[in-house]
Amino acid sequence: MIDLTKPPTRVRGELLGAGLAALLVAVAFLVPQLASESWRDSVFAAAAPIFGHWAPRVGWGTFPALALAVAVVLWGPALTHRLAWRPLLGASYLTALTWAFALAFVDGWKRGITSRLADGHEYLAEVPGVTDIPAMLHGFADRILDGQPDSWTTHVSGHPPGALLFFVLLDRLGLGGPTWAGIVCVLVGCTAPLAVAVALRALGSEDRARAVLPFLVLAPAAIWIAVSADAVFTGVTAWGVALLAVAAGRAIAPAASGAPPVTTPMNTAATATSRADRRYPVAAVAAGMLLALGIYLNYGLVLMGFLAVAVLFAARTARPLIPAVLGALFVVAAFTIAGFWWFDGYHLVVDRYYQGIAMDRPYGYWWWGNLAATVCAVGLATAAALSHALAPARLRALEPGSLLVAAALCAIAAADISGLSKAETERIWLPFDMWLLVATAFLPAARTRPWLAVQAAGAVILVHLLKTNW
Figure 1 (tube, helix red, strand yellow):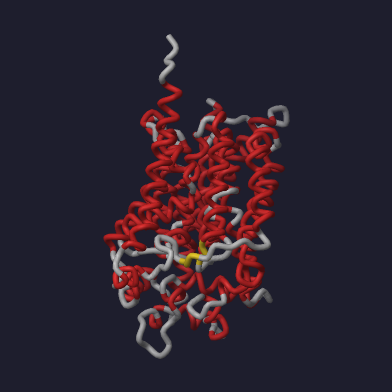
Figure 2 (figure 1 turned 90 degrees about the horizontal axis):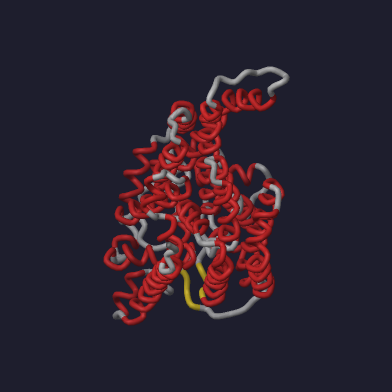
């Protein structure tokens, strides 16, 4: 017998998820406006839960953003299933870049791109003073705490030295200044959707990879990818997870054949399998290096471990673990030999965190305000899709997309509970948000376009109502 109640139940689940998320966002915006002036000042975010201020406007990027959104909504879902894999990735990257730049250009070139990283509290303010990279790394921890004549600026002190080192190396390559820094951040950050798709495909979920790409490229998160250093952190760690997925997929390829590979000129499939078996440690080592580099860009990215574990569970193999750990240890050893011990930096940065406005920001608001900011970054379509992605049957079956979404939620929950991310999570949690967006791959095909339109509309509304600080 056909269950005629099932489809409406699914629709209700989507609407309930999106409705609760919208209510959370509305309340998070409303509470600071109704609170006393002294409490509102303690929040230190004029447009809480978003770090920015209210400024309704239109700009040069308005029409391109609207035109691109309409085009992706109308033709994106069909093209993602029609194009060959490599052209699809290329088209997705160009779309993500265009979307990010269009949203940034609502504020024009200078305000949208150039001046975002020119603030005196940003990394670029310290770049001219770094004349000796080994000396900078060796003495980095000594300058983390505030109240010293040579204390690092806010953002440099709040991150491991890898973040500052990235911009120093850009400068050494002749790409100095806020304009080049902003452009490079966008170029790197916009590769994250591709990494997510590559990971899903490597884990045997190419259909999910194709389904999620339109939502990834039109995500409201692009507002903060253009332009913040967290876009770079997002790109680096996303590719770390993707390479681990590639390694896991290659590691299990020989077992999947059911017999040892026979490498003869007449058996090209077996030869390819053998090559995959030999190459998987290379991808695993590279994955470990990128994920380890992530924790030297942002202390909180140690939580990407949730995603790494999810990949191994989804692939049902631990074979890439040892080469990945070796790759990670190489990066750790390099920074340690250079004079920076990660745990010293972490403990000092916690002290520095509470030397600033974090001491005054009310945890009672921000623990749920952070989640509202995350909804703003991932869109209501993601909230609508969670009931599908986290279905118990899918989790029990270790479906890759479901495990990645669950892992992203665990990382966000851990970061939120820590209290070390009070506000600004719309950019700080971008590395987790990319994987939370995988939930949209589980939306029924018949409702992809409406939810994609909701996703794009959310981004357009946000960028035209608020001037974000990043």
